[in-house]
View (spheres, rainbow, N blue to C red):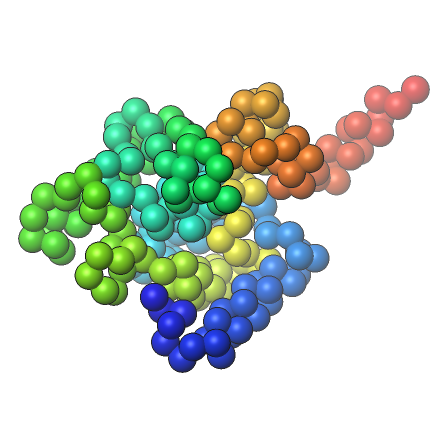
Length: 211
């Protein structure tokens, strides 16, 4: 959608900006603390960008999955990422909805109704795009995220920061890797483990156990 404007140069510009945002973390998106996530999302000045960020943060999904959600895929109990919107379109998955996410979704739904002038139906995109029948473009979200990261003073941030932060936090809390795989949609343990950050303190604590 937004990428179409300006054609290939616009796409290259978006890719360059995305790589630049990650450059300070050696190609890996920065893992953010709870306070940093709160700060970053508060700097997203449009509610439709905030709800996408909240979905990524609370479900560990990819940005492209969040933007393609329809109202029929969301309930108070779970967000159902149907196969057609997942990476590779290989399998559907369901992620339980936390109270924080449900509250954000309820607030966004009220805004959606005001903006659209009607109640949503199952096939309506959760976050509509600029054109009729379209969803929010990933470029639109990335542009907003870049501005929010700059205002927050957070380096190394990309849309994958939400996913990495969610999975790393759950892993540090003791959630088994196989459970994380079911929630994240990763198809292999090695692919999942590349998302998980190991802190210097964790390295020191592990080394201290060596006999």
